[in-house]
Image (cartoon, rainbow, N blue to C red; front, top):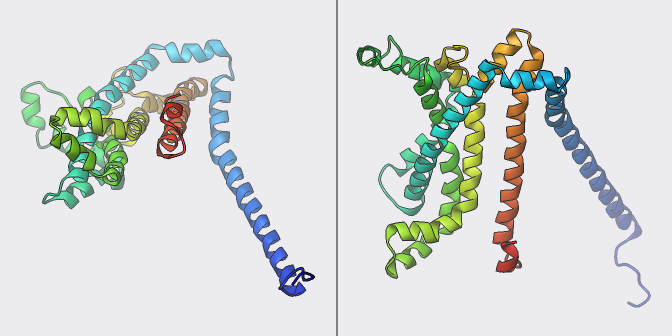
Length: 299
């Protein structure tokens, strides 16, 4: 009717407004709780790391990073990541391709094994390598006969790093490839493309952002791994210490400025990883948004 302003009674309108206000209060409370948790447990530790690293000035900071043991730890960390990440890249793409594109016996078992490092403690993984390749391990006498050293040496650190990081790339690609299906690859094969051409020109462009995201996460975990590497390294200063292990040694020796200086490099790596993650998510959103023209998505 023309003169009626509402078909609901006044008491019902009052209850609706109260519920709306309550909903706004709950949302504000949850937002404040989330921001407070974020500031207390994420932002504050990062600020403390950089503040402590620079507390004695830039000269002390630079001296801690250029000290021979620190340089050795940085080089070993980069070496382990440089070996582990490409190997996991090959494994991750191969495993994701097999799981997402083919049906075969043992597929569920392969998927479960990929998740194994997520469920096994890194310390346990390190102990397994000691049991297998250590001096008293299964292959210890054989390796000693050929003067090959894996535990308490660089090969053991690389093996431990590979174990704890190999699920990251595969786990990023499997759901992405499954969602995309195999129609485009099948069409390319029907048109005469080889397997390599199909992968390079069809599959890779479709998974490139997920692949890059997986590589970044894998690299960050490889450079920051502590538990498994700590078990197999032997903590030989200047030889088998990675950056996380070097930080632990400096902190235990009460060299706090030097410890936080090296830790700040790992914090910078975490911030870089976060920035790349945000960029990849933005590019992925652009690609999936049908309202964005192709020429806009390339800018």
